[in-house]
Amino acid sequence: MNPRTHTARSAHPTLTGSVQASSPEASSDSANRPLIRRGNAWKALLLASLIPLTAAAPALGPAVANPAPDPNKAGLIEKKLVPDLLGTMQKLRIPGAIVSVTMAKWGTTTTALGTDNLGTGQRIDAADHVRVGDITRTFTGTVILQLADAHRLGLDEPVARLVPGVPNGRNITVRQLLHMTSGLFDYAEDQGLNQTLTQHPETQFAPKDLLAVAFKHQPYFAPGKAFHSSATDAVLLGMIAERVTHQSLQTLFQQRIFAPLGMKDTRIDSSTAIPAPAARGYQHVSNAAALTAPVLTGKDAAWADYSAGKPADVTTANASWTWAAGAATSTVADLNRWVPALATGKLLSAKMHKEQLKFTATSAPTSTTGASMSATSTAAAPAVPTTPTTPTAMTYGLALADYAGLLGHEGRIRGYSSFIGYDPVKQATVVVLANSDRSPDGTTPASELTKRVLADVFGG
Image 1 (cartoon, rainbow, N blue to C red):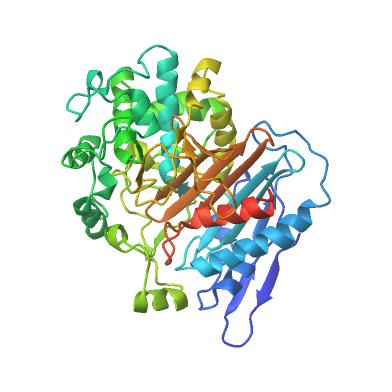
Image 2 (cartoon, rainbow, N blue to C red; image 1 turned 30 degrees about the vertical axis):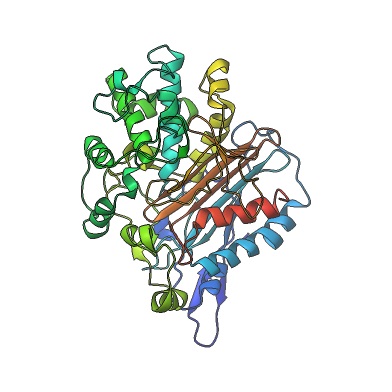
């Protein structure tokens, strides 16, 4: 379709946007993107910058190639899902989002909504790179499982044999690190660390620095007795992978995951770097404040409600503090390749994939702080069913979550939130990326957008 211009009358500035058809992997010249001028009308801004990108090529992953056109697709996406996404973005003050749905019957549809830069109003693009936070753990976990496949380490091997100085290290196994049942304190919950992240976002951390923060605290529980999402576990797994192979984590990711799957735009960036083109990341609530008051109230809430400029731009915050737990950057096209491979064990033996799918019950919603996926410990209680109102309830396998049949992971890091999921039965993939990590009401933007996808596309 041809580009179109929308003119808002009265106090609203002129807004521009376009609707076009292309592959989600098609390159985009960010310099030629139309700008969306800043204003106080969030919904008008989002509507004007609507760019649904419908893939003409076969769906990525195991979806059926060259699917027949589905007469219900346009109505479902454009008349139902997109308005619901826009409404959620307006309500939660989400600057921009990229939402991709793959169904065997219609291929891949990727929709880009809003802006990737509140300063310029430039519309977000499906080719934009974003930080993917905890999704990094799926890469780290896969490498560990591959090494176990090759008998270079054992899933039930004590961590003390691989990394010295770990509290309870003789009783914590590699499997428990993957399951996040080690009981080790999550360094991402340390108040001092979060103050540093807020006041000195450029600070460079080494993995040993992160473990030193974690080991100052008492463990939550004895190994294997409960579940607590912990970035500490993922950092230990990254260190184990490097020690066993004598290779860097980026090299391991590239050789073992990215290259085999054709993921050309994914990497681990333990610095301030994020590849271009990139969506800028925004934060309503600082890391330190989020530990005690994750919901904006009073004047702060009112300001966020009426000002498009309220969120802090944290794009260049150093990601080294998340490393193996959350420092990866990626694109929607690469994640569309990754999540079906992850969920089906494409890069593992059948035996190891079976181990990967041994899930630990947890009733903890994925409410995150920084790179940490949850600040809540929970004993092995029945999982909360995944529905359109609770898509983040889960059971947890070996660096893989099960959202009632949708296998994948949620991600969050300063300025960004994300969700990837694959349903092996329906051969359906969902990827949601947002350039905001926490909304003023304390919810996670990508999770809230995922709820709309589950409700509108999958019917619950």
